[in-house]
Amino acid sequence: MTDMGGLFQKLQEGRYNLTNQRKIVLQVFLDHQNEHLSAEDVHQIVKRQSSDNIGLATVYRSLELLTELEVLQKMDFGDGRSRYEFIEADTPHHHHHLICLGCGIVIEFEEDLLESLETTIFKNSNFTIIDHEVKFYGYCQECQKNREG
Image (cartoon, rainbow, N blue to C red):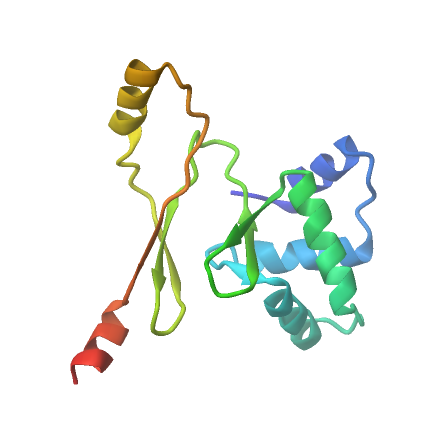
């Protein structure tokens, strides 16, 4: 699990300060660890929860810095908005995502079924795979019900 102390250390290693704005943005991700938040999502949450007035541009700058420092991973789910989540330092591969075309919900899929494919690729082409990303597009259970009925 990610905590503010570890995040503060990561910023210090990159020679950046943990400004109040960055701390607020990081806290949003700590409070919403199972979500894939866009800059707009973060901005709306900050506006609702904090008395500090942080502009959308500041949120974008913070997200880009945190991505550059490999605290956050930036993802594109094909909806025109970049989304972010914490990078999992203790796992060799990222988890995969199930993306509902109906409601837009993103569900994490933890099982890595591509290990044997990576081994085959290496054996056949001597290409070392460092990481992969898989996105499945379809309909969640709720949207399936709505489409049927």
